[in-house]
Every structure is written in structure tokens, then in C-alpha cells.
Amino acid sequence: MMIEIDCRGLACPQPVLRAKKALDNMQEEEVLVIVDNPAAKENLERLANFLNYIFKLEKKEDNNYYIIIKKPKGNEYST
Amino acid sequence: MNTLRKFSGMVLLTGIVVGVLGGLLVKLGNPPNMGICVACFLRDTAGALGLHRASVVQYIRPEIIGFVLGAFLVSLLKGEFRSQGGSSTVIRFSLGAFLMIGALMFLGCPIRMLLRLGGGDLNALPGLAGFISGIWIGVLFLKRGFVLSRATSLSKANGLIMPTFMFGLLILLLVRPGFIFFSSKGSASQHAPILISFIAGLIIGGLAQRARFCFVAGVRDIILIKNPHLLIGFVAVLLFATITNLTLGQFHLGFLNQPVAHNDYIWNYLGMLLVGLAATLLGGCPLRQLILAGEGNSDSAITVLGMLIGSAFCHNFFLASGVEGVTLNGKIAVTLGILFCFITGLGNREV
Image 1 (cartoon, chains in turn brown, purple):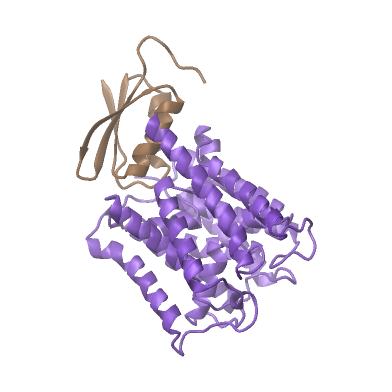
Image 2: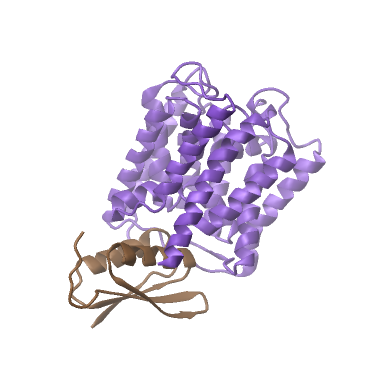
């Protein structure tokens, strides 16, 4: 199961905030975040990097970025 | 990972450039400790347009024009220009106006707060504490679910209005028609040559667009997601402004007799608290609003217009502080601004 978060049209820092919230209570393995500007995409990449999660730009369609953030298999992150 | 490193490098570079130019522009003619200030410069521009009639603060500041046009040109080049808007317009306008009332209580935006510190003005310390407190309160609202409504894509013309307006201001500055006011005394009579100020603005605008530079996000992301990425820029501005001011003999440490400043600690604190809080609710600092307006964002454009009108109110209704201190009207307006932010913060959640 993958949770989907549509952050199009939302200002900073909503995409990061919502992605982090979903990742924090993550029962699902993956989170799909849709954003519509490059700054939000970079912020999500930074978040994933910071949490030691895997960041993957699934596709870019018009101005929309579909981003998958997932837990690395087999090792829990610790902060 | 490489893209992340590249962006961190851009943030550092932007911070260094803002710090150094902030010091240099003073040497070249801008008022002391006011090489760059989004709040003061929008206020001067409002004065030049006759929106207020305080004769000492009227000048179309080319740095402001440069910030917007620099971001506009770079976003076009990079294919990132996008017309977007329609998110809680009147709330954004009001937050922009109140942000300005807070900034002119303190006498500076977040950039000038750091430039003042970098010039040895310790009155900026309570301002810094207030700024951080305001952001912290804003983060509490964000955690409770505060959000302004979603923006949508708009036709290209919407996004072109603010860059066109800035281009118009540039023409007015160069032509100097009789209906535009230019101070012959006071802080707005002090300015670096137009071309240098404009180019400095263009450089900072372009860099800030690439770096997604934001003074509020620098602090906010530490509190919210413990990410220090944008704080590097914050620290770089302070450090390089200090070095530049020391080198140019513009560093004077102390609380007393600081240029375009007062030493009312409580209201320096509360003024910047209002700035930090309003900017957190808006999603970005005053510089970031100008940059986003250049990228085609109408929500930021309306915020900039709110700041412009807010600055005019400040002088029409005697809200702005001066070297002699703060005013009762200013205290009332800042209190109302903080109250407005609390109501906005509590009352806006996504339905």
C-alpha cells in the first residue's frame, strides 16, 4: 500500500510538513508526494536525504513532480 | 545528493553576496547599516509614489526592482517562471501590511536585522530574539494544521504584472517626472549610484531565486524538521556583513547612537516577532516574497503590494519608529498585528 499526498498549490513548508507527517506515522512502505514546483521537489529530496530515506522522482508531467519517498529495506533509521 | 550539495553551495554563495554587498552599498552611498533592507526600501518606494508624504523617506530603490527582475529573468532562463495564485488573497495582503508595521517598528527587515548586527548595532539582538520567537509561534500554528488555501495555475499575464510594474518603476526612477517624490534630506537622500544599486539587486535576485533563499525558512526548518540547510545563508550574511563592515571601518559596537535605530528593547523584540510570525504564516520572508513575485507568483505579488501599503500606513498614521524611539500608535498597530496573526493562525485550516 502506498499513501498519496497531493501538495499541488500549497505554499512552503506544507509539502515537507505533510510528507514528514506521513513518514513519521508510516504504516505504509512508500509515500507518493505530488508537488508543482522545483523548490518543493528539492525540499522533499533534502528531507528524504536527512531522514536516510530513498528519494525517487517517479515522473514529471507538465509542472507536476511525482515523488516517491520510501524506507530503505531492512534497516530502520534513527535520528 | 549532488543536487543537494549544489543548492547548499548556492545558499552559502547568496548569503556571502548579500553580506558583502550589504556593507559595500553603504560605502557607496546607502544609509548606514542599511545597504539592503526590503522593508525600508519598499517604504522609500511607497514614499516616492506619494503613498505617504514623509519627506525624508521617498526614493524609488533600484535594489527592490533588481530583486524582482533578477528573479524574473533567471526563472525565465531556467524554465521556472509560472503564473500561480489565488490563495487567500486578502489574508496575504493583510499579513504583508502587518509584517511591514512590525518591520518599521524595529526599523528593518530580516536582512537589515543581520546587517545591523554586522555593523555592531546590538539593538538588533532583541530583534533577532523576537524574529525567532515569531517563527516559533508560527511553527506551532503550522503543526496545528494552519494552511492558507491552495493556489492554482493562472494565465501568464497574471505573473507578468509584478515584473512589469517593477520595470515601470525603473523608468520612473530614470526619467524622474515631477509627480514622483525624491527626498533631498534624510535616509532616502542617501543612496548608491542607480546603476550599481540596480545591478546589486539583479545579482541578489538571481542568486536568491536559484538558492530558494529565505530567512524565515532558515530558522523555521530548524524548529520544524531540524534541517539546517537554509540557516547557512543566515549565518553567512551575518559573518560577511561583519567582515565587510570591519574592513571598511563601518563597525561600531554598542546600543547607543546607532544609525536609523532606537534602543527600545521590548518593541524591537515585538516588532520582529510580528515579522517572524507573519512571514511564517505567509510561507516566506520579505525577500522571498519579492523573488516569488518575480517568478510569477501572484500570491507573493499581492503580499508585496500589502507591504507597500502597510509601509504607507506606517508613515501616514505615525506607526513607524524613528531614532527618537517608538510611537504609541506604533505599539497599538503592532499589538493589533500580532492579534491578527493569532486569529489567522487559529482560523485557517484545510477543510
